[in-house]
Amino acid sequence: MLAQAFDIFFLFLPLWAPIILGYIALKIWLSYICADFIVKEGSVLLEIKLPREILKSPLAMELVFTGLHQGANNTLIDGYIKGKTRPSFSLEIVSIEGQVKFFIWSRARFRRLIETQIYAQYPGVEIYEAEDYTKNVHHPGNLKPGATAPFWAAYFKLLKPDVYPIKTYVDYGLDKDPKEELKIDPMTSVLEYMGSMRKGEQAWIQIVVQAHRKEGFNDGRLFKKADWTDPGKKEIKKLIDSLKLDGGDVESTAKYRQPTKGESEIITALERSLSKLPFDVGVRAFYIAQPEAFNPIGIAGLIGSFRQYSSPTLNGFKQAKNTNFDYPWEDFRRKRRNGIEKTMLEAYKRRAFFQEPYKNPRGVTPFILNTEELATIFHFPGSVATTPTIPKSMSKKGEPPPNLPI
Image (cartoon, rainbow, N blue to C red; front, side, top):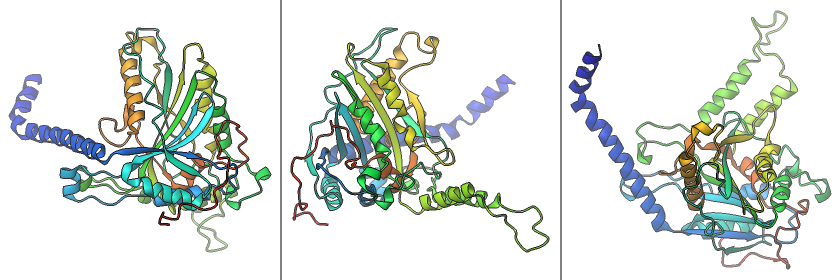
């Protein structure tokens, strides 16, 4: 039998070998031209310095993200000759020894768009190009077994299918714009954790996003990838079908039972989720510390920094992969961990998640969040966030720059 299998294998080798080799060559070519396209476009890291007082709800940030939903279709020339890819943005909350800062990274040509969108919603902020805070953080090299790297890092993923939304600012009542003393902002927990970093400690949270849409051959895919609309509608239909009565009601023509309050809220939340613009999202986080400053609580705080966005009936975040291995025999020479640590750090510095060679890192695939969900996990907090280490502008700006087209 084995001999026959080898005979068949070599008999059909001239048929399938060119197909496989052609596919590999195409992937290598696409990886090269996409990387070349991104490098030629250039990039910019913008720091947003907040005013002393922000009185807007996260809806303002949701409008900013609506403006950043850039997802034009590629032509064959764009996809296979120019290497054109959808623009991605990196939303970053960073603490350097307790100093909490907000950054947005993008390709250089989108700088004006970002500034326009933010100034339109937050006239009092200051935006300027910043030096990359990651440039002085390096992996020490080929560490030996038992050695600890100066950082710990992890990816995050959703608990349930993408169509189920996380607990958003609407669920916390922030869409009603209550008085500052009555606000419950889920981001305050993250900011308090970030502000607790001591000398020699840093914490980075990076949210890499690109507009979600259907993908096909023009995007370098041999097989089409549908968007989230159809799976979302099927999930809603499945929930509605679960309300059907067996055989119907003899006394009436009713075919469905009355949904419970919880069931009704889930269906409503799913419908609201599908009504907003979606983004492909990748989330990674780093805890960095000097040997004398390392504190395991820093790792625990980072893992728990997304817990307040979870809902028992809807969705939430959980840790996907991190730089550790559970058992020593999985990597007894520490070679695998060295490689993972270097790659995760390099991917963070390049703000890469959707293109080779950093696509789907460690098997962690992008998930989908809509503008409402993104605005919940990344927005500029009001005075309800009492973290004293968030730099604030001393003076209040009255108007955005007049030369920015709004």
